[in-house]
Image 1 (cartoon, rainbow, N blue to C red):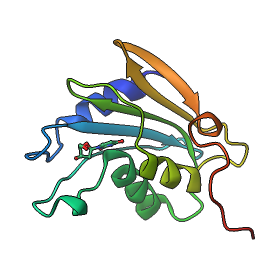
Image 2: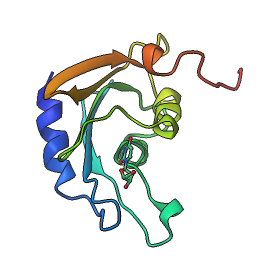
Image 3: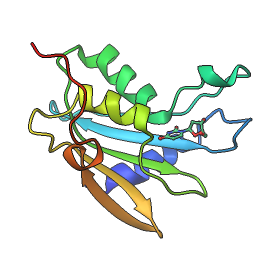
Image 4: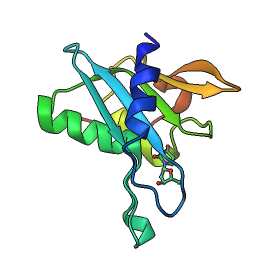
Length: 129
Ligand code: THU
């Protein structure tokens, strides 16, 4: 499972982060078994920056279609450690397993930590169908 962490670390090498210097990579596996990777891409107009997690999810939707579901995701920042930001949590929730059991893996003190989306974003905003 933690191969995803290695893929995320490799993806972080592709980051475009001249402003923050935070080079972030993401790797996710979908229900179909496919793996997608991505990185953060910053912009001189700072607010236009896209995080690695959202970049990767949008790419997965573009390649697999709108029914794509994330089973697990790993996030790595070179030289730093953090779980996905709040904006990314909301986007991950949109494409998570219905039971909230989609797993998110990140590093803490050099060790992998796994959290479910139910833990990372309890009571997520959803539009009732
Ligand atoms: N960043 C991510 O890629 N993912 C996160 O979850 C948090 C922050 C990026 C955005 C920006 O390029 C840099 O890290 C500093 O915020």
